[in-house]
Image (tube, rainbow, N blue to C red; front, side, top):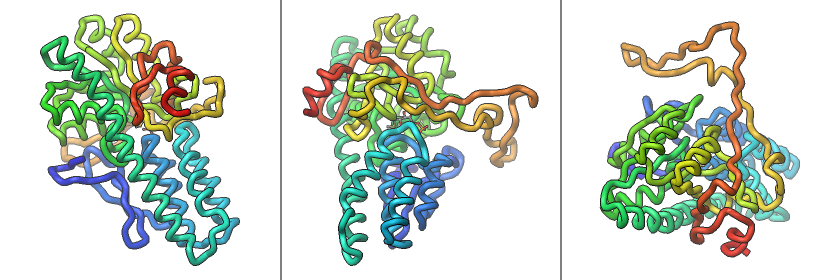
Length: 356
Ligand code: MRU
């Protein structure tokens, strides 16, 4: 998708260097960062220079390529693969990508290992682009239907950033929106700010602006009243891990939006590629929920009056704060899952119809 009219992807590999857009600096600065070692990739994931489930999976895949360039000794690769998987706990795409890479390179001789790993990492990215595009085409049908009935702008609420910046291109939740916009359907997006890191304000609104899609940032608690006032036609969010039974783990606050949507009879969709499905964990209580530094809550960064980036404290110094990064929306609150293979019920039966 575009930034200042130029097409970008979120990640690419050039001359043994992994290039990423540093998302911690957006929307104020557009910086392309170079990663040269597996440790660089691990730190980029931990510090959220790259974030979003599919993108951290792709970064981990290339992280293994960087590890091979450094030292293709089996024990170093094994340690790097473990560190990459552990760099963030909740999104299943990390483990999915690392396992896929390790399977591909296991038993490969040292002359071939780099090329094989590079091809596989590139394949993971290409596949994600194709899958996200298909998610868009499938989700477009829902937006078209609402538009046909309403005959006016379709208002869509989204949470966090499940946009192209969270994937390689297109995004998951935003892909149907981009496709609708390209087809000439008038859409307007309510963008949840998404405290504490403000991925909605800093990333979703930014990328929608760059594609000229009308959007309005709202405080995270605003969705409920907008739904009561019939100012939301549908919700679409992404996910970091969806269980085979349809339970959806996503950015903290997603669950409360789903409850409000249910109470107001508003369709609540979750968009995801198959790399985000966890077929193993049976109960949502077993999903590891990331708890991040409370400083993400107590401090905030923005531009000062001289346009310099500045971090300030916004909580009382003596107050404790707690920063859980994800929550779980039980399947019963999800109207449907929009996947690369089609739309299904959020249930084992629904997912199996598409994938087994
Ligand atoms: O903590 P983040 O910014 O990595 O969380 C991202 C989200 O919760 C996204 O909504 C999710 O990964 C889906 S991305 C297509």
